[in-house]
Image (cartoon, rainbow, N blue to C red; front, side, top):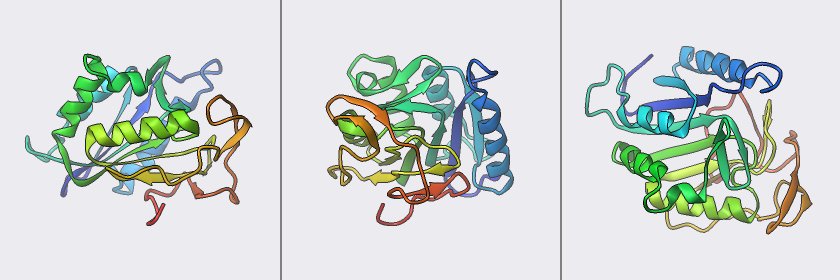
Length: 211
């Protein structure tokens, strides 16, 4: 793991194993090894809860020393409109409210964020529909950094990628990525394709400028 400059960190859901859990933990673990080998991440960890994830993000320094800052966080796991899940536990609007333990963990991570830091959810739907808009705005405000997420179901293709900056309103439609339902009551999402808006592949590691 390299340690030059602010840290680029990745967390993934380690509970999604076997046929019942669809076995994606192994995919995310392999991806972490590939990205780490390419020097794209300075540290990564499989986690079983958001409490564990936020504690690790708030304390990990690798060999960078106690004052290490964080340039980027990527989360690889499952999501839905306005939330990202680890197992059955969600990081969502309620997590940001005063008194919630997730909020305390997020504020601890915020103290370590470098200027121009990015938090990127590589999860299905998290920035989709009205709930996704609300979550994106409120998390961006709480962290004081850019956030990014998707409006489609993602896999090898990852569509509907958008980056939101502090004090910025969402610039993508609430209905983007919806296959059924309404922005207020979403029912089903669209799979990512090469032709859907703002599509990258799982091999891309940057949010394109202007997205």
